[in-house]
Each structure stands twice: as C-alpha cells, then as structure tokens.
Amino acid sequence: MDLFVYGTLMVPKIMRAVCGYARPGLPARLWGHRRGRLAGETYPAIVPSIGHHVDGLLYRGVSPRQIRQLDRFEGPMYRRTLVRVEVDGVRFRSAVYRLAPTYYRRLQRGAWSLQGFVARDRAAFVTTYRGFHG
Image (cartoon, rainbow, N blue to C red; front, side, top):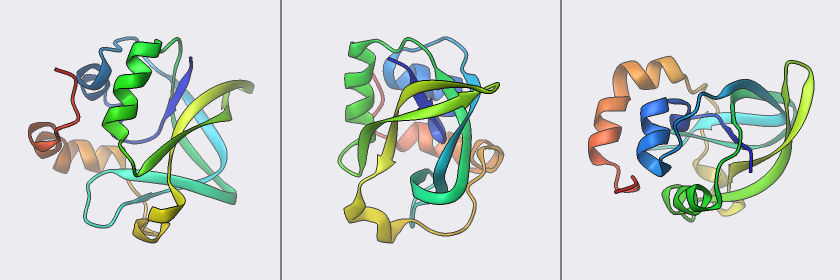
C-alpha cells in the first residue's frame, strides 16, 4: 500500500521507529486538504478543505504489518482513508491519516512547519511519544 504523510512521519528516523519502513519518500501533494497544528501538540493533522493543498511525502509499498503499526501509532484521533496524491504530475492512490471529525475543533489555523518541528520539537517528541515500534 502507498501512504501519504505530511507531519512527523516525514522524518525518516521517526517513520523507521514507528513501523520499520526505511525507504525514502517521494515529494507529493494532496489537493483539497489543509494542514494545521493540533492544539496542545507538536504534530499536525489534516482535514478536507476545498481550494487548499498539503505537501508531504509518498511512501511506496508499505506492508500490511507496517500499516497495522501505523494504525496504532496514529490512534483514535485519526482515520486512515484512501486519497489520490500527485507526484511529478502523476496521480497515485494512497492511504492517508486524516483527523477524525470529532476532533476538528482541535485543529488550529496556523501553519505547521516540518523544519520548525525538527529544530524545536523532534527530540522531545521522540523521547516522550509512546506509539513507537518496539
């Protein structure tokens, strides 16, 4: 299965720690969604939003075992769904984890930055988050 990621899982060491996936991702774009930081958290979520897009990475060939580990990592706030993402003008069918509607109120309008996360929040996230693969 292909998986589009747009937040902490764009960091290769985090993706590897969560589910053991170690191949590089392809720069990809998901149309019709917006990304925001979750209130009280260092990580983002996405929701459907006409006229917006989210840039991220497409991981190709994620195994069923890895998907199960990712399901546990993402937890009940996220729903895995199928979307189409664009890589160099070519569209791919992909899974993505979107914020579940009951949690929409937690999504903030401000931008979330991968560079900001890596610089300020990654170390604390890695040492405190319990969802990592053992």
